[in-house]
Image (cartoon, rainbow, N blue to C red; front, side):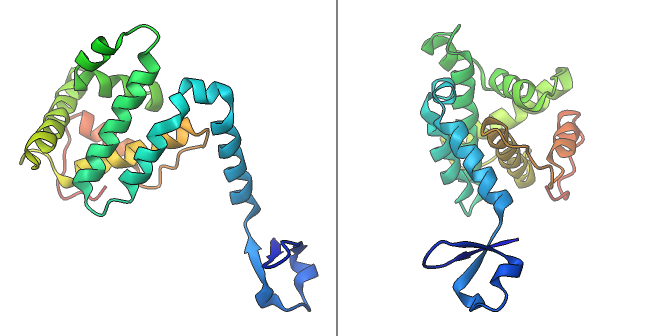
Length: 195
């Protein structure tokens, strides 16, 4: 454990801080500091900036996770998926082709690229249902009855995992999102299940 002096920034070990005015020292989690430095190094690299077009989607993600309501968070996360789809396909698809690619195909691509999930016919039906929910929510301000709030929340959780991957971090599965996703893609929806 390390402690940092609030005024001077001096780092001390736990043993060194004993006998000093401990209220002037803050505990420092070096693991977090290391991780933050790694993320900063990653997003500052020219290769990363070129691949991810300077990372505008990070701004979108910050907006999404600061939402108190799930619907706007879901829509912002959908925008992030569309943005990442475009960045990953800009070498061989022009802007018109990217815009005209269906939402289902974009989601299937993202699931495969970032979460290593193959999409079969059953999964495509579920993706199409979620895509319709996105369209209804974006154009009419209300989700359809056949989509649960927990399914929208799952999409946000999956976005968190994708963001971790893009930032060079190991995504957490603390919310068991991958199992929930696999159940959803098989058509095993349980509305009361908390995601």
